[in-house]
Image (cartoon, rainbow, N blue to C red; front, side, top):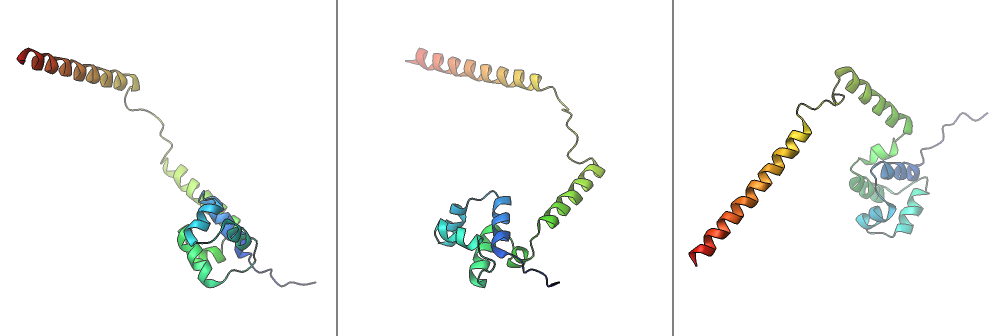
Length: 130
């Protein structure tokens, strides 16, 4: 039985981080100056040379180490921890309006009507002056 750990698949990690960032392969390719097909090949590779990895990391806004050590479990744990902290502090869960939105719409409408009245008055004054 072989107990050796399988090396991280760097290309797959790049793909996952890129997807989490909402970036397409083409956008990453343009940013690092290669073709979309090259990015596809990189994402299919278990290893990536350090120079290219550093360029990709910079574009993705993470460190090269973060790409090497990326794991889906780590991301899930991060978000679970974040959500637990948010729910325990009730931050972000207060969806109650402190004002009546209809009143705000009416107020805005009244201001717009007044602005139009002011314009008409100004234009009438200009016409009378000629």
